Amino acid sequence: DTAVSQTPKYLVTQMGNDKSIKCEQNLGHDTMYWYKQDSKKFLKIMFSYNNKELIINETVPNRFSPKSPDKAHLNLHINSLELGDSAVYFCASSQGGLTLQTQYFGPGTRLLVL
Amino acid sequence: AQKITQTQPGMFVQEKEAVTLDCTYDTSDPSYGLFWYKQPSSGEMIFLIYQGSYDQQNATEGRYSLNFQKARKSANLVISASQLGDSAMYFCAMSLGGTSYGKLTFGQGTILTVHP
Image 1: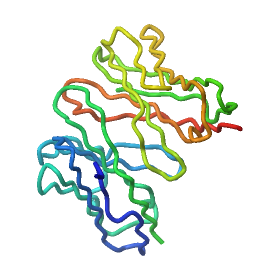
Image 2: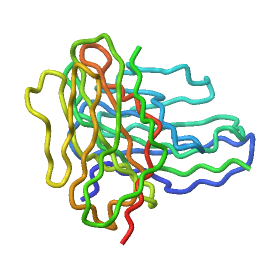
Image 3: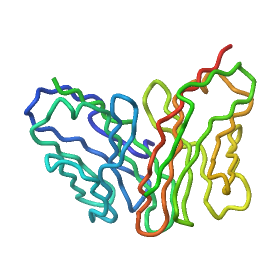
Image 4: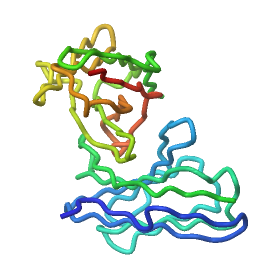
């Protein structure tokens, strides 16, 4: 059973298009995250949701809009894609709350904007 | 603000030998957690080991151990008896307690190559 899954795994699209990445976790976790890994492999938090509520938004352009329909799902919609959006996007989840918990990552979505 | 530094862009080790990957951190928060993740060439992020700031003993998980030196603010990963499959990028990360909701701050990563 896959703990944290993402679809699609690969996404190749043209500049200016709108695309979505979906994430699902079956761990029963309360908190979900989106991270971006750039071409130099640097990982940075983008968003975090706790029980469907947005709790972290790390100066991400408005073109990125996360949505959490329920605790087990966190989707990322990107409008008007730009070349600089090309990266690997990772979803992660943890038990969350105010205690320190391990985050488990999905396999990543490799986005290439042409 | 918290910061994680990994000063070794690349490391080489002979199969079956031990290797230490360095990680230093900076935070003024007394409650924090330190994590190591492995990213093989296939791209997934694999959790390896966790150390809490209040833990009295160094964490161990199989061949992985974390050399936690609080006064020096270092959290080095030690891999014993290296295997070819250990070749990967390794990331040190930190999260703070309280209202940060576990946001992970990552270091730059270290590429480990295990030679036969």
